[in-house]
Image (cartoon, rainbow, N blue to C red):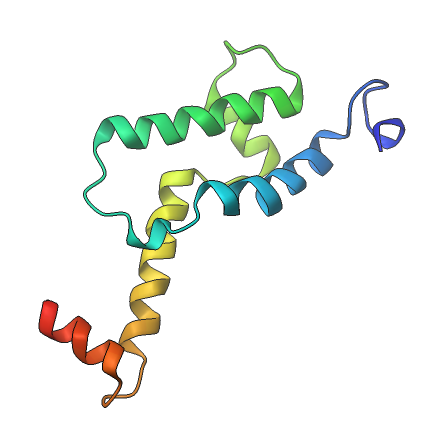
Length: 110
């Protein structure tokens, strides 16, 4: 795979970004639908993880602005993906039948 990349010794950054979004992100965000009350420190830690990964994928210096590095690969920020997953999970619960046990438990809790 490395021989097919833009750089002679590395994999194409777009291929690496695709693998990152299909393999690493789902593992890193496993169960994120249930994460609640995340602190700013925890969100910053998750964001820094992606910032470093994106810069390594592209082989650019760590001093490069992260927003530019992420936008070049077309990746969404991880905190935004977490919120999206939470909303999709809520949608699945709300869309259940009215006699569903899961939906009734959700309604009683909230």
